[in-house]
Length: 169
Image 1 (cartoon, helix red, strand yellow):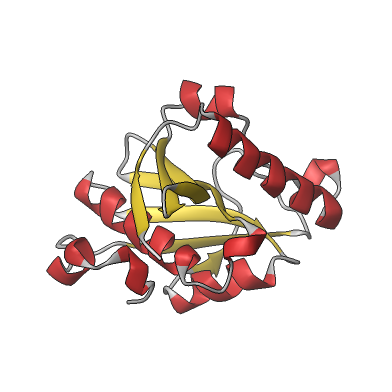
Image 2 (cartoon, one colour):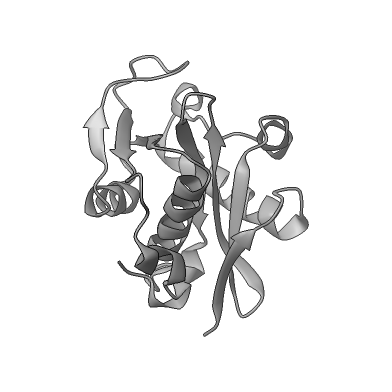
């Protein structure tokens, strides 16, 4: 298996398919008022830095971050296709997003996810994200979990050179 993770635009058919899968999964877990996934047009309008994970050339995961002017960013639309789960792609994608954000001068990453998203919550906890309260335009929601992580001022060299296929830290 050859895994690559690189910056790409979200406005391509394979990424649209991934985001539709993510939306269907979310719709099966949460009511509309508790789903906050951005559509492709909004991802583009917000200039979200977007990465795509490809396994043997096929898009199997994606995610991005929307940077604010204050050195913070919010993780957006992190998703791995069902058939690619359990292969370390989520870990590799999150590691790549963190390294990219740190390289762009981001010092604090935030995210919102759902209480029923056990795999995502486990991944974020393993990567050192801590629970916090609502931020930005979010309000309190009993189905949402808000998390954040400080990124080091000096990103470890091993994080930049890590093989995404290894999938770990």
